[in-house]
Length: 124
Image (cartoon, rainbow, N blue to C red; front, side, top):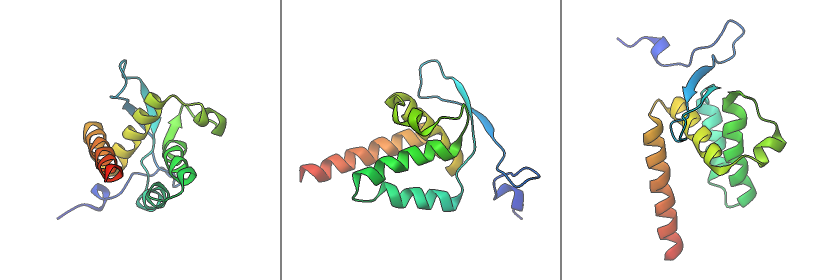
């Protein structure tokens, strides 16, 4: 029989999700950051933004993943705007991997596949 603890994210005594250290595998030097996984509700909220027709909403979805999931170092809204694309991609990938229970490599591959499919749709 499955254990409930295997089905839920761990929380501290005050109810906050417990941060975990992860390596950013998509970056050359593989730095370590502290993140918390995104809950199912937060993932659904971000997915709704990401699939919006509004470009600003789509960009906000990417930033929301990092803003919600990155614990240390914490970035301000202004710093998020200036975040380098390689760092944004690595952070987003690591947070989504922890949230979905899959590897960073799998998230990266699925992202690449989704981009390729969108490009094909645009060419039609």
